[in-house]
Structure formats: structure tokens, C-alpha cells
Length: 96
Length: 459
Image (cartoon, rainbow over all chains, first blue to last red; front, side):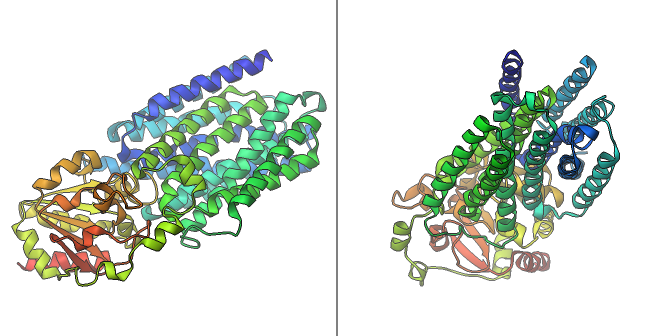
């Protein structure tokens, strides 16, 4: 129970932090914000790694599900960060 | 195992700094980079963790995922960003759902406490809804099902399916059975389809932002399954981001979130019946040719361009910038008016114009540009429709009354570049087109702009 309350505390505080930072993002950058935060939601990859690498603790099926999760999360991360970078460079170059 | 949590803390701090960097176009590239470094820290820390026992599946998954991700990121057209973000949302949700299912198999029985099962249930449920909801949104953006689709007894179906899902969720927490988890996932997948399929193309910015938020919340729920702070923090950051964006989009359309989600199309059937058809425009619309417009532009001191979804469809962002450059070379002051819901996702127009190398300080937000229209000589409306309809401001009986608009009608002359007089997403005629100071220039935005540039240069 204690662990749950601790985790809930972190969750709620993180939502507040997120709210504060993201309200400061200008509308011009809302599309890169979405693709960039998408990449961050790929953090599920941590879970996917634990599932795919559980060895004998799991079975073939759990490893397969973990593998699929890993592929999806990795597309999210690599695709998300790269496309955001591509977009942001377009915003940057004119000012220089 | 303390150090691994320390590594997740470092990753979370990097994510926060990364998002903070997105506060300005100058710091944004570095911010995104910081986020990527944070992800690397989290992944490496997890890999060297003793809990990982075999690497075969992991390496295979990483290679395949990276290759696909890199390929999409490199080749996607900027006009197709809404589609890409919709797909990425779906993948994020799918990953969380799959992790939840896999963890149910892996975790030993004694871990199956009601709180753990609740977290697992939420992770699978939100993940599944995000997956199918995003796929439907993607299909709509691709043009497979652009309009709000009407399924018979749609609202009843939704209620029933929601109830079934809730009951299954409760049963799962009580019984902890794998079979119920499968049924629950299946019904959540169906629910995702049903929730999004009835939403019209114009509401896509809201839907995509909301699904973005869900993909984060699914990750946070996975964090509760694994009791992993890194996941909880990152997931809630994304969850908050998506919620804020959906709120902004709703405000810009003067709609509530619930009316977007449950209202279906923007205009009800009864309202639709009282809307005039073609006779609305008959004899009142003036059209013109590129030469006439070129002459108007030649004499103008201040020109504003108001782009909309039509610009993206016609891939006309580069020609638009060319026209702006041509006019500026002749001493005309050119700026761009950006309505928050122009396009199919938040910030869509900004990205397209950035791609065409329009400096971002030329893109003016709605609240800042509206007072300037009265001093504007010519406004070019490029593929935008409802967001310029003065009826939203003046006509209390209009279905879109109250929606904030770009007040282009206040400029001296308005040139509307459009293929035809067909209605926009709201399905209603646009008062702007019959105003005395409006001229229609029919055709595909790209072709028309090319003609226009030529005409200006020939003057």
C-alpha cells in the first residue's frame, strides 16, 4: 500500500509538472510537441525489455508479446525523435 | 537496485528539460536531443539490469523497430504529419497493452493483488482503446472515412460496449483470470473503433491530441504494473501534454470535449435541414481571374495570407512562400494568419510553412492578427473555410455561432482561393463568399498560386 501511495504521489506531481511546462509551449511548436511527446511515451520500452528478456520466468508467448511491444515502442521512439528533429530544423534555419 | 532508479530519475529530468526546450524554436532542437538522451539512459539502464536474462528477442525487436521508425521519419511528407502522429499514438498504446498482457503471464501468482490487477487492467484497456482509436483516426486522415460515419444505434452500442468493458474490468480485478483479460482487451479494442469512427474530420485535431494523451496514460499505468517511477513520470508528462492540447483545440472550435466525443458531426440533423443549399450563393458571388488579383496585390501595402487544410491537400506550401517572396520583393508587407484549428492537427500549418522556409515570426496567431485585418489591403484565403465564416461572429442562429474566427472580412478586399463553393467541415455555406468585398478565385491552390505569381511578375 505504501508503495502504491508513493507511486500515486509521483504520478500526480508529474502531471502538474507536465501541465506547467507544456502550457508554455507556443502554438507554432504544437506539432513537434506532439511527435516529441509521442517519442517519450515510447518509455513503455522499459516494460517491453523486461517482458522480452524474462527468460525462463516467462514462456514463449510472453516473450513474443514482449517482442511485439518492443518493436512498437522502438518505432515510437526512433520515429518520434527523428521526425521531431527533422521538423525543428525547419523552424530553426530561417532565423540564423 | 537503487542505481537503476537513479538512472530513471536522470532520464525523467532529461525529459522535463527536453519538453521545456520546446518552449521556443531556438532551444527546441536541443530540447528534443535531451529527450532522446534521456530515453537512451533509461533503455541502457534497463538492459544492464539483472532482471534481463535473455537478449535474443530484445535485439531483434530493437533492430526491427528502429529500422521501421527511421524509415518512416525520413520519408514522411510534412503534409502527412497528422497521419504519422496518429500512427505513433497507436503504436505507443499497443506497446503498453502488449506489455500488460505479457506481464500477466510472467508475474508470479502472489503478485496478483487487486491494486496490481487494477493497474494491469488500466494499462491493457487504455492501450487497446488508443491502438484501435488511432488506427481509425489514421484511416480517416488518409481519406478512407473522412466524414463522421453513422452506425445504426451508435450511441446505444457505445453505452452497451462501455458497460460490458466496465463489468469485465471489475470481474478481472476480482477473479484475476487470463480469459477475462483477453475478453476485456477485445472489448476495449472494439470500443476504440466505436469511439472514434463517429467523429468527423474537422474534429481530428482534438481526437489526435486526446489519443496522444491516452498513449501517455497507458504508459503511466504500465508504470504502476511494474512499480517503475521512470514510466510513471514520463507517462504522466505525455498525458498532461495531450490533455492541454485537446483543451486548446476545443476552445478554438467553441466546442466541449464531450460534444466532440459524443456529439458526432458538428451540425445536428435538424439544423442541417434548415441550412440553405446552393441558392445561398446564387447571383451573389463574384469571381475573378489571376490578372485582376495580381493588380490588387500590386497596389497593396499590407497582405495577409490565411491558410487552411486545403493548402496541405494541394501541397501548396512552397508556392505560397514563393508568392510571399515575390510580393515582399515589391515592397508589400506579407504575414500569415494562423487559426488554431487550421489543418488536421495542432500546429499543422506552422510546420508546413516552416518547411517552405517561411520565417516563424511571420506566422501570426489568431488573437494577434485579428486587430490587424482592418488595416489590411488584401487577404488571401487559401483553402480555409469555416474558420473565416463571419456568421460565427454575427449570426446567433448559425450552428457555428461563437466559434472564434479569423476576421478576414474586415480587410479591404478578400480573395478566396478555392476549388468550388462546396462547404467546409461544418457543412454550412460561408457568409464570407457573398460579401461585397470578397472575390472568388476558383481552382487548385497550387495551380492558382503559380498563375498568380506569373501574373504579378508580368506587371
